[in-house]
Amino acid sequence: MKRQNGVAVLRRLRGVESMSFTELSESTRLSRPTIEDAVAELIDDGLVVAIAPEPASNRPVGRPAKRFAFRADAGLVVACELGVHELRLMLADLDGVVLARGGQGIDADLPAAGRLAAMTAAVSALLADHSRTPAEVWAIAVSTTGIVDANGTVVRSSRLADWAGTDIAGAFERMFPQAAASVGNDARCAALAEHWIGAGADLDASVTVLAGTTMAAAITIDGKPYLGRHGASGEIGGLPELGWPRAAAALREFASAGGVLDGGDDERSRAALAEFIEHFALGLITLVTVLDTPRLIIAGELAGVGDRLIGPLQERLDSACLFPVEVVASTLGTDVSVLGALRLALNDVDAWLFDTERARRPLAS
Image 1 (tube, rainbow, N blue to C red):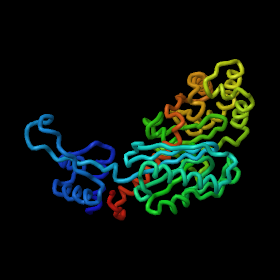
Image 2: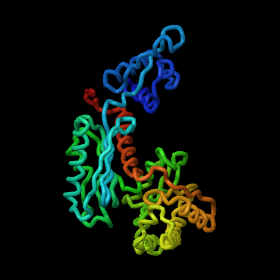
Image 3: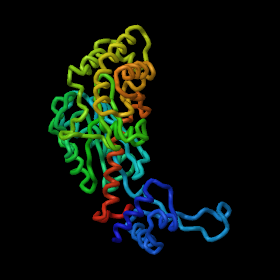
Image 4: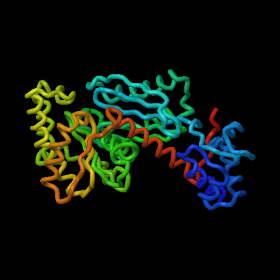
């Protein structure tokens, strides 16, 4: 029961600036003595800290109420995005506040073992560059291209020839034996980010599509990316009947495709974009019709094209779908998938914090 009381207090403190004994008691419906005992134990565990009262000149007359806050500095989380050509890293506190970033280019032809080694080395360097240690890491999560199973292993990859079979989670579990390690597909991580702090934050269900010279879709249901039996839900990109292979070819065919992605408005770019939309819309209509979602989020490279893409797509969906579907562009930019990995790591932190059977962690130094 004591651990359950502590978890109840942590749930209230997580994500707010601070709370008093009275506020905690009212929100948890636990007695004042019970709250005091729970807070004392959480302070001993290094998870909660007492907040110093404001100076007397800035507060009402009388004895100030004690306030307490979750210790976001008690540990770290690491987020990685491993793309075909680039690696992105984020180091954050337990509230998800980004403390540092890293990244580097990667040769697309690098073998799987070398790609994995480059990622683990980059994580080690990011920690060392900011005088942090592996022991401070509570969770690490990776966003990657390909279909990923529940164990964090890539089971299929069309963009990296030998990436299938790579145990990414296992590599980081060996590197950080005290930390949780999770791996997600890049589109599903993007959907997780959109639901957390992006265009899907106000919805329980949506479709997120990473759109560019390759396309990938993810489905969010009840606020979580839906994986399916094999982690392959939304993987319609390889089905020629649904248009996406031809949509990708429409962009790759033009030497000026970069102009499309960068917002170019020459005749060739407009033609490439129009052909892309014609084929791209078919798969989108199929997805949103099957799922009956209220919003479609376009993320990735083509999100920056803006109304030249969103407007025509909205018109196509308006004419084809049974019910209105709002088409919006992501505002999370190129960080969308690595932010999703960050949220994935924070979810692992929450799972540990709110587990009534959790083992005690060492105190933060």
